[in-house]
Length: 135
View 1 (cartoon, rainbow, N blue to C red):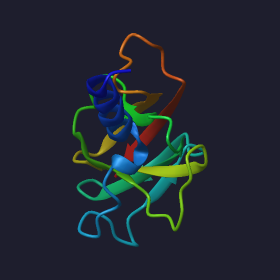
View 2: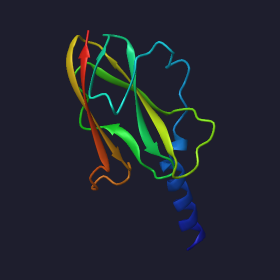
View 3: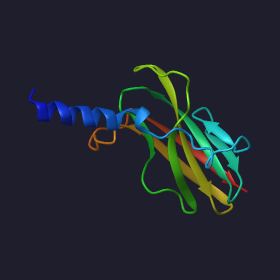
View 4: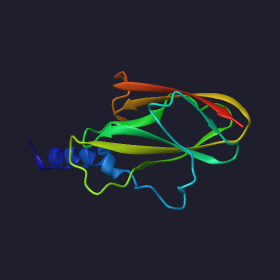
């Protein structure tokens, strides 16, 4: 392996690691924000208020959760963050936090895929679907 190949491999590996995501920013997150996870197939959110979905990831694999296709009308992705943890070893379970805001009352369907961003032709390792009732 040449030095150039080694450096490129190191850059790709560092960028793909969930640790490369910013940790949860206090300005975006607060204790009163509704929190959901992969066990919630449906939930209620308030129009105009942010909500978060916490998804399990495996550290060091390069996998991340991202929305599939366009977001439902009126739903905005505010950010994706690594949940702050005392210690995260490669291969250990960790949490990724996706923060959204729904602007309009109604029902929205959101699908997430667990993918490696650089493997666009590979099917997702997992998917999760949510029905959001916005009041």
